[in-house]
Length: 79
Image (cartoon, rainbow, N blue to C red; front, side, top):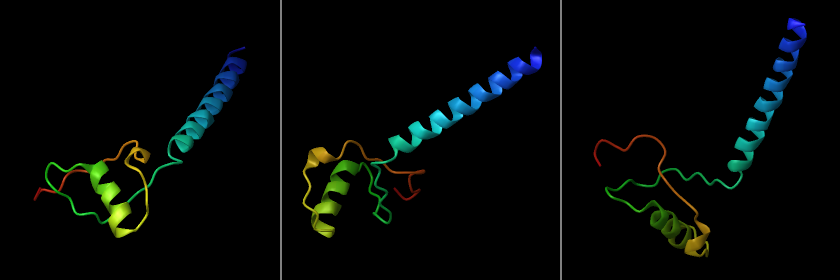
């Protein structure tokens, strides 16, 4: 009886783990990672991304296309 319960719990954990992985993958499908953008104090990252796309990459986008933007990692010590 205990082994059956443990087996069922193991199966349920696997199913839940697979579901979490699927949800994480779906949440990242529209991500865009941009590297090498100079950091500024009190910066507006949405504005920086928009300007990079428009001016540097010549990609015509509207401002509402950016749902959210932020830096990864800790801020530079010099900023």
